[in-house]
Structure formats: structure tokens, C-alpha cells
Image 1 (tube, rainbow, N blue to C red):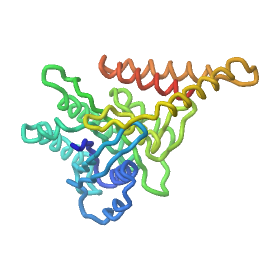
Image 2: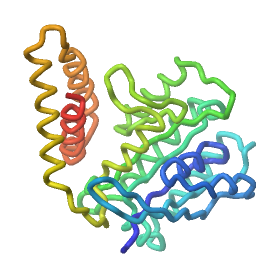
Image 3: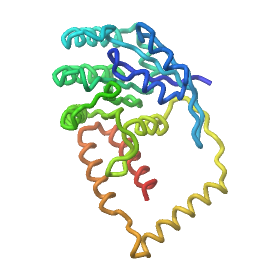
Image 4: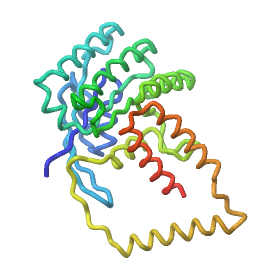
Length: 275
């Protein structure tokens, strides 16, 4: 089977290996912590859900190899990385990529640096599209914020970073969280897993679904919904649903038409699961 590819790009100590470990569940990855540079690492893994099976190559790269690099130096190195990435030499890599995760260290990366870096990420996003249709790329891009172990980042700073990322039409994921937020949306580590599992992959093998089990699950969900509708003591959480829809609509304003269609389908699936 032809493998799929995603790229995790970031500076040293920004959570790249943690993300790769989360996706692959590979116990060997932590042994790479002592490697001097993570540039060029490839983690080969596979993914199986109840619907499909696929092979996945997780490409890890660093645009700066020094933890002590200044913001100016990191930006210069990131821009240099982008110039190489968009060159003809890397055309084959761009063609096979299904996703990009850009990692930042929310404790050490300044707001100014993050803002400038996001502008370069936007250029990387454009380079992944077709020359005639700049946004005709079926992959995903997420900005993942991490924090060193046993350290805390202020909530106000996290919100400021999230707003900056969303204003660029990109998704922000805080690696320090997990579970669901108040709107029943997956967040943090669980959102990364959901993003990977729900993506429309280029190469995969569909698995046969047990039709009887599917019907059983469907009937059980319908019965649960019916009970919520007829039982006054059961709340349907309509306020949560409307809040989710309003948030989704606001987020969709910053997306292209093609991205809106995919995002709308994803939100609909989440609401159905929520019900």
C-alpha cells in the first residue's frame, strides 16, 4: 500500500516528537529525545479505524537547530526553509503531503515571532496549492502550541495566540489540553487524534462494515434521541448545539469556499455524534 505523508515542522523543543508519538503510539519515539537534531526524521506507522486502514509516514523537520536562537534568527531560518520547500526540487514532497502541523513553544516564542511566522506559514500553504487555483489543496494545516513539562502558560497569552492563528484562517491546537471544551468539541491531544482520523486521506483501504452492527448502532442512537425529545427530564442541549453552530459560522468566514465545504461537513458530523 502507498503510504500517506504529513509533515511536522517546528523549532527545537516545540512538541514535534510528542505529536508524532501521539499519532503513531510508537514507544520507540521517546528514544529520539537525545538525538542532536530532529531534522529529516521519518516515523513510519499505520492507522486503523472501524472504517479504513492506511499507512502513514510522519516527516519531522526543524527550520532552526538551536534552542537559543533569537526570534530574528528563527524567522530567517524559517524563511530560508520556505524558500527551499517551494522550489522545484521539493515538488514531489509537496504533491504527496496530506497535512502540515506547525509547532510553537508558547513559553519561549514571543507573540511578535509567532505573528511573523504565521505569515510565512500562509505562504507555505499557498505553495501547496495548484498554480492556477492557489487553495486547491485537500490537505490540512494546524498550528500546535506546546509548553515545556511542569511549566505554565497564562490563559490570556494562549487566547491571544489562538486569536492570531484563527485570524490567518488556520486551526490552533493547545497540546497541553485534552478531552472536550464547553461546546463538546475535542481539544488538545484528542483533537489531534480526531484531525488525523477524520481526514480524507489520499491512500487508504476501506474496511467492510458489519451492516447488522451499523443498523443496531443507528437504531440505538435514534432511540436515545427520541427519549430526549419525549422525556421532559432529559435535556437535548439545544443551547450547546446553537453555540457550536454560531462558532462554526464565525470560523467559516475566514476560510475559502473549498475549505468551508469541508469544514461544514465536519461540523455536521460532530453535531450528529453529539446528538
